[in-house]
Amino acid sequence: MSARIICGFMKPLTSDDRKDVFIIDDSLYDRSRSRNMELLAQVFDHCSMKFKRGYRMFTLGWTGGNSFVPVNRCLFSAADDKNLLCGAKSCDGRFLAGKRRRQSRRKATDVMIEFLRFAQASGILARYVLFDSWFSSSKSILAIKNELHIDTIAMIKKSSKIKYGCDGESLNIKEICSRNRKSRGRAKYLLI
View 1 (cartoon, one colour):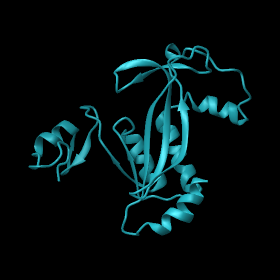
View 2 (cartoon, rainbow, N blue to C red):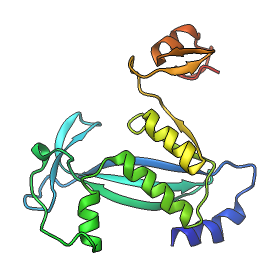
View 3 (tube, rainbow, N blue to C red):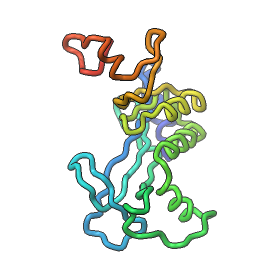
């Protein structure tokens, strides 16, 4: 349904100069009052900086700059068994219910690549993928570029272990920021 809305209705209204993008984000799906829901987990809420009962709601959407159309979504439970509050019913993995239960315990970066492949196979195309630093690992950025041929716009994690090629040298993000002065009136991380 999203592909029909985007390709049949939204794309003809969008100028070719406008950059259409995929947006990937996750948020807390709070189920604080629940006790015995399947795969209920303790999930860390980054807004309140506390663990809460619930799931992570992972969403892939498309935008042409004016409207946002959800393309795919799933609920993530805890990947670690110590944060899992309720187990899952036994289910045949060949059916949709079993696939969803397995998917809820997978890594978000792997599901992200799977969702982008599915969107492209459905005919939904975009020039860029936007996501926050939570998903910006070099492995996922390279997979998006090499396998799906889409450029990525993301905030990079501040880590001294990850190196990037800059001016012919291999530098971490702290060294890159220290060598480049902040432009007056610009955002903190925008070095252009």
